Every structure is written in C-alpha cells, then in structure tokens.
Amino acid sequence: MGRQRAYPSDLTDEQWEIIEPMLPLIKEPGRIPKHPFRDIGDAILYIDRSGCSWWQLPVDFPPWQTVYGWFRQWKARGVTERILDELREQIRLAQGRDAEPSAGVIDSQSVKAADTVGKDSRGYDAGKKVNGRKRFIVTDTLGLLVSVTVLAASWQDRDGAKTALLGVYLSTPIRYIFADQGFAGRLVDWAARTLSMVIDIVRKPEWQRGFQVHPKRWVVERTLAWLTAHRRLARDYERDPAVSEEMIRWAAINQMLRRLTRGEPARRQQRRQARTAPL
Image 1 (tube, rainbow, N blue to C red):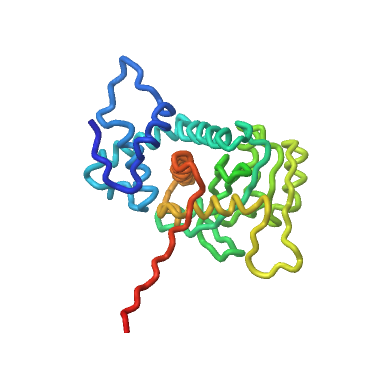
Image 2: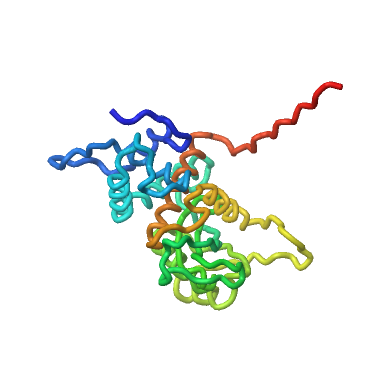
C-alpha cells in the first residue's frame, strides 16, 4: 500500500502505468524496499515542481533521506536517462516520426545560483548579467530533451556546447544541429572535424527588432520555458552540477508523461472576464 495521491505533481494512474516498467526491477534475494517506487517518484516530482528543499518534504511522503538516496542511485545507474530515451521514442512514434531523431536543436540558459552553490561551479555571464550557472540542452525537432549539461555561467556558448554535443554524439544518431548565433565560429569547425556533425546557424533577419519566433529554433526555447515552470529550476540550488542536470531530466520526464497522456497540445487557460455590477 502506498500513500494517497494528494498533490497536483503526483503521477496519475495512467502516467504510472507508462513509467513503472522503466524502473529497475527488485531482484531476489535482495531486500524489498519499504516504500513503493511510485511514492519515491511522486516525492521527487513534488520537489521539482514546488521548489522546496529535500528536508521540507511533507510527512505523507517517504523520509527525505530515503527519497534522496533513490534519486542518487537512479542517477548513478542512468535510470532517468533511459526513461527519457523511452518516453521520447514513444512520443515520436505516436506522431509518426522515426523512433530515433536525426536532427537536434541546441540552446543555453543562464540562471542565478543560490548561496548553496559553491564558487568552484558558478560564474558570471556578462552578456545576461547573471551570477550563477548555465544550462546547455539539446532537444530533437519536437522539443523533447536529448542531452543536458550544466556549467558555470561564465562559459561561452561555443565552448560549453562541446560537452553537450559530445554526449549527443555518443548516445544518439543525431548529426545535424540547429543553433543560434552564439554558437557560431570555431565550434562549427570543431564539430565538423571531431564529431562529423553539422551545426546550422539560424541567424536572425537584419530587419528584426525585439523578439521573433525562429523556425527550427523555437522548439528548444519553448522547452526551456516549460522546464523553468518547475520552481526548483527557476534558480540553481544544487551544490553538484550533476544533480542540477538530474533535476532537469526529471522535469523533462514530467513534461513527456503529460504530453503522452494528454494526447493533444496544451491549451492556454482562458481568462475569466470580470463581472460588472448592473447599473
């Protein structure tokens, strides 16, 4: 018996049916965990969505030490990365795409760091005027997360992207990447020479003033916006950048599960018109 579902961040029955087979099996004669994996997943998603610290988990969840222990264990075993791969494949097949993407989109996002982030893994992004960390994400052309790398915000896009692109090269067949002008220059030559990967720089038109949606690039910007809707990601609180990366993966898992079970694009909630008193 697990806990009762009580929070908006909890997995629905339909979502749990999708993700349960992707979690590691309990092998005999190992000790059966005291707390169901569904409760562990709900607790991690609660932290991601609400932004609370580990030790502030509500008492109806398993103890935070237990939840954090499984979080670290699944990260070390690559469980969340495999879940992402399987969910991405299911969504792509449902939309009539090939199971594996052949093209991707890269972008970066600088976020402020809390006082829990040490000086050795934070920096200052002079362009964005942000003291904190920088997230590099690669998505497929549907905006589904493929790879994430977290570095100090002082890293230039063309340098920090190398780690993210190397991860994509080693784990996927993606060899064509769309990017903005911040990734132009020597990164393009490095990717072609080292990874046999083409980086297509999508430049903004000369006449553009202010924000404009760019074909082939807007999907990754939308994904970054969706991810930062998780309050834990609105700022970087993690001492270890690898934990930041794992929190981003869990947020992406949450979004993919909702996308699979919703079955249609998200719709913006209509604003209610204020009622005026009769004259």
